[in-house]
Length: 444
Ligand code: SF4
Image 1 (cartoon, protein in one colour):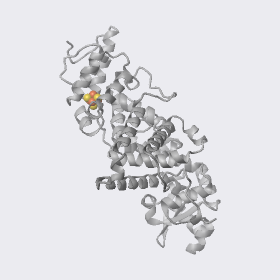
Image 2 (cartoon, rainbow, N blue to C red):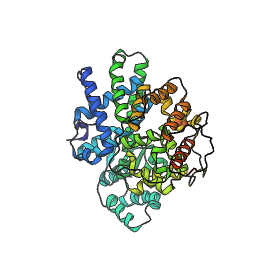
Image 3 (cartoon, rainbow, N blue to C red):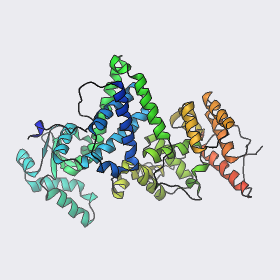
Image 4 (tube, rainbow, N blue to C red):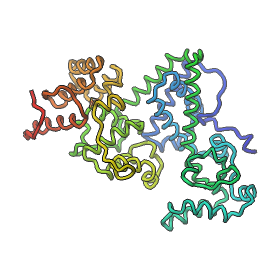
């Protein structure tokens, strides 16, 4: 059967679906898809070993895109796009060859696969193509072992090379990962499949954008789903913020970056969210990364931290991570790029640009999160914190949280920096142990 006649697999999230579905079924499938995407972080192997349920993966995926469009929740959107990308990478690795080819065609359009097809289509010899591409990429393969692997995977394998229309793989052109011939990009098949997640995510974003436009133009069929989609969003927020660390995950030790119990709520929530979902959007990664750096975590430790715990590193080797995420982490340590030694942002910046729970969360979410960290928190303290957050005074709410953790009241007007919070919480603990330390802020 030719590729044109082959259908996309039923589990593929971008496969067109038709037919009718009740709102209740939409909610059920949406929730199941959320559970699946969250499970991906905790137990990717389990996901690999289970056969996909097409209804959940495809229809559930569509429901979640609708939820994104109807609510326009940007955190949900970035989580969804990232998680769907990771799920697709796993499904693709374990799919049949025919399924993989049809997915490649859906994402990259027409392609020519294999040495025989390419050499005859472009009327060029195999050695010529191999040498030209190899010349561009050889610096990546300094070790003899890597070069042998490349040779076996590309030169000695009939399907080691592929051609796509050049505009379909702009990043490969930018990185010089292939050669151009008659409007086509000829590249190693492995390079193209590594672009799969990125390409899929762009397509997913396009779908969401179209749905958002439809909604803004007053589409009744979307607007009527508002309550149902809000219910899904609430479900996601509750599941995401529930403290459910992966077993192997522990930050325990004496150093301040190993003491989340002394951190302000913003950083504890981000850490917990990373534990439960394996994902943080760019700004929140930066917020947590710079905080950990200023608490004394070394570059090497932080590299290890993100490699282990961020879901987009599932299934990638340490070498690949070093090239991909590693660059970004080295950047915040000033080891590459602009070589600036970045400071951790202060509360004012976090509140306006990043994540401060007292600013972002609803009262109900805030209550849940505080209760999950402090099940014994006094109702009066809880009410005071919620009230300060409700009236738009996040740094005051944070101050009351600090007093609760420190078990003492400092003479400070507000919390201005997450590091100030840690320092005061730490000093209070030391004082309790009999060491008065050197506290700058006077205590009442
Ligand atoms: S007030 Fe500052 S330290 Fe406290 S949670 Fe908000 S951003 Fe974090």
